[in-house]
Length: 166
View 1 (cartoon, helix red, strand yellow):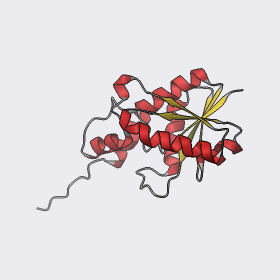
View 2 (view 1 turned 180 degrees about the vertical axis):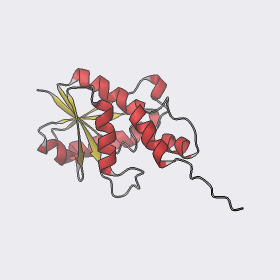
View 3 (view 1 turned 90 degrees about the vertical axis):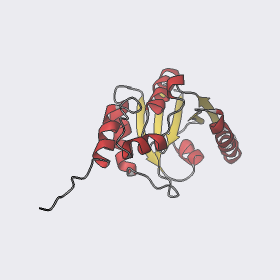
């Protein structure tokens, strides 16, 4: 059985992430979407909320599962018996960082291979940060994220009713 891990913070999951997950599920027998807990990042959603949102969005893919992890990705991959990591590349600007990370992962574990996948061209501009900013400012993110994520963002950024005094 050929298995791959698709790691990320997924804060939140975008349609670009989902596109990569769907295409990877056609290539690999099993895909684990590994939601990372990164102590150096301030996340909008908790790790359990992110895991739940991703799980709801990939439920239609029978060979995809969602898990969480902390620590080194290569250690997580080794514990799960795989040597394939999938990383998404949206633009040339992503390449340098992803290239360095892939080389470091290979240095830490020479058996680990990183496969780069690009989302559909309609999603290459998407980032979780941009989606959060649009939602925070009251914009419509429906074209950029799956419905469960849109609903979660709406609940976080719901306008607070103003109280008027008479």
